[in-house]
Amino acid sequence: MEEISLRDVFFILRKWMVLIIILAAIAVLIAGVLSYYVLKPEYQTFTTLMVGKPKDYQSDGGLEYNEILLNQKLVSTYGELVKSRIVTDRVVGNLGLNMSYDTFRNKVSVNLVKDTEIIRIQVTDKDTYLAADIANETAEVFMDTV
Image (tube, rainbow, N blue to C red; front, side, top):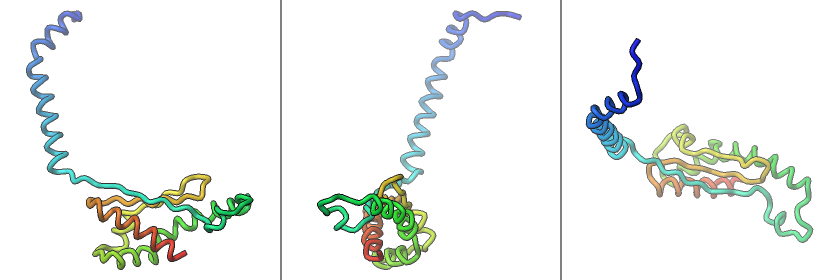
């Protein structure tokens, strides 16, 4: 069995260097064309809501522990309510969107920040302004609903 030295490997790579560079350039060019012309960008936007009554956060004595626990429990319930048919149908109607309930639900995700009273509504769409409108309107309709 013949051994190949490091020097031999270097000469082989040097011999094929032009082909390696051309193939790498073609791969980069194909990736660039695909990402620019074929793949459509998707934009994400989000709005953040805090669960609780305004008076809870303005009191002189601060929040009581039980109120904080109650609000944290409500966050998961409210998270489900954000994606409920009641809220989504009103948002679709208010914005005059022509999309199904399932399409809307696929665009909207609700994230609950662990151990907090915060709900984050995130919307993904190909139109930046529509994504922002959906996020803001969902927050407004949700606040009106509860």
